[in-house]
Length: 104
Image (tube, rainbow, N blue to C red; front, top):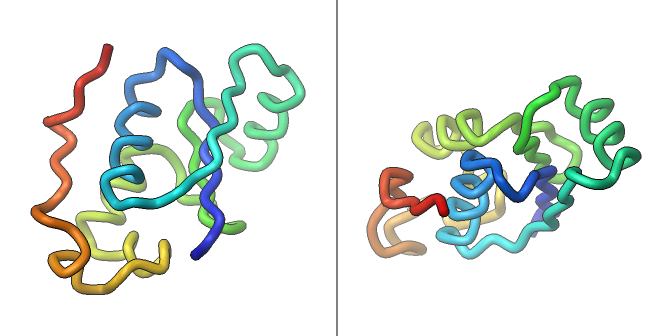
């Protein structure tokens, strides 16, 4: 399975949605919280060329943020990149609906 890395902050609702989507798919990921780590923040910005979170990488491929990942998912491009079965119905019961996310 590919390595998934996500740069986040603890108060970001899009970070929570991105984590929920990956957890729903049963994907393990490394979460790097950049809030109090200036070097990690610089690494994130340098690697992604963006100044927003989340920033998601699958192996060395830069997915982008939550909206980018959700769009890839809706187009059927995310599961193959994650090494999941191409027929998502066989792997998951129902589809992921981000409107179900609870942001606290």
